[in-house]
Image 1 (cartoon, rainbow, N blue to C red):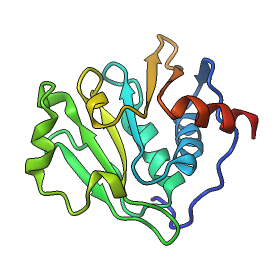
Image 2: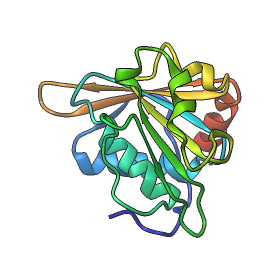
Image 3: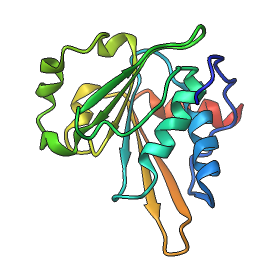
Image 4: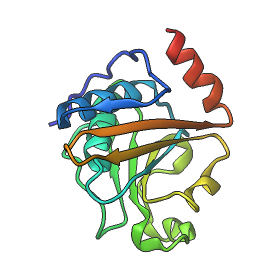
Length: 167
């Protein structure tokens, strides 16, 4: 269950990070989530089973949003309400959208993209249009069940990631 208190941002490593367990993936997500603010767009890229939803659970925890986070595959998007110190999280699974993010407007979400942090699974190639300022998180699953994470910042995220690294 996600907590209601927003975590303090920890140091965010840009270079390749090895995540050995699901708990490591959650912890990395918490660090990233604590650094997010309204209007942020994060694209999660990786094959099935790479840990995108687990990472999103950590992001939600770091943002301080409440409720259970699960993959929105069949509903396309879920809105997770903000906790006392956080911003809402919109969790999108773009796999079935086929690159047409205009369908997000048709979902009648309870919040708008500018006032929320947006995490998009399977969104590369289309979700970038949501914002020039976005962060791509590439997850790779290895045979030994570890994951590798590589961050690819775009726009203002280049400076933000550098600042988080230096903190």
